[in-house]
Image (cartoon, rainbow, N blue to C red; front, side, top):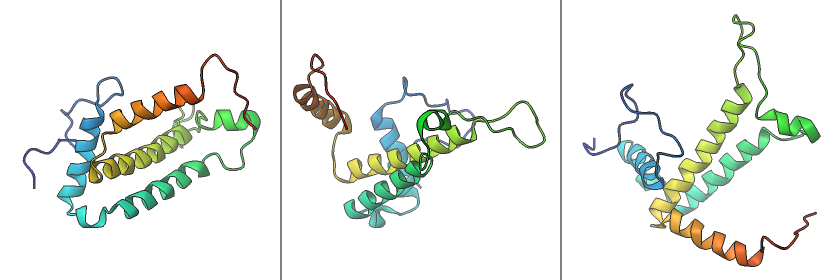
Length: 142
């Protein structure tokens, strides 16, 4: 077991937030998780790309067959917890968050395997998109 791996399972580990956690930190979590289970041999670019597609499809299931206002409410729908009426939980929102996390974990792992700096790649892509879709031009879709 790696001694320098990120600790994610203890109660004294601060909770991660989008404002305080870097892409590199998240990538280290995923890489350590795979390493500790000796999964590197299975994490080929093809297998990871397939896994991203599968997890993205599972995310899409949460929005399948929803229309109009139902679609917008789905991620925020409150379902009462059994035995604790009135408090409710954000079951659908939580499930969507888990699917998003699955997609992100595989994406981070693929970037690591391919040695791609995701922050630099996203910045480059957004710059290209800004040229392709200028903010001062109306863009209609559909």
